[in-house]
Image 1 (cartoon, one colour):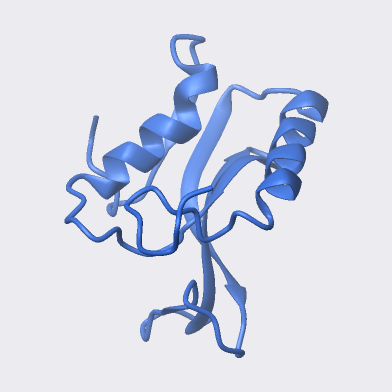
Image 2: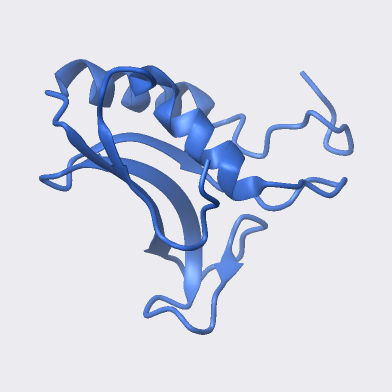
Length: 121
């Protein structure tokens, strides 16, 4: 296991088995629809955490940011919990998120909806 100061340290290492299990279950029960959307979601949280984000212009100002890919019914088929920026500058965050979340459906003729945060790929 990596130490806290390491570059590859996972802030969610205690929850990683649960997150992995949920991700697999979401994908296994999903009936893929043609229309998919990638966007961010905030889970309200007022306690202390290094994962908490503050976004003053959003309805939920403080909480955990989760990137999600959902189908047209709103069912979350895939998600990533944002753990903050890494020690080195990450360029093209939006592009990486879209590529990670759409990798299972790439080339399968789906229509993807994204907002202006994400670049046109």
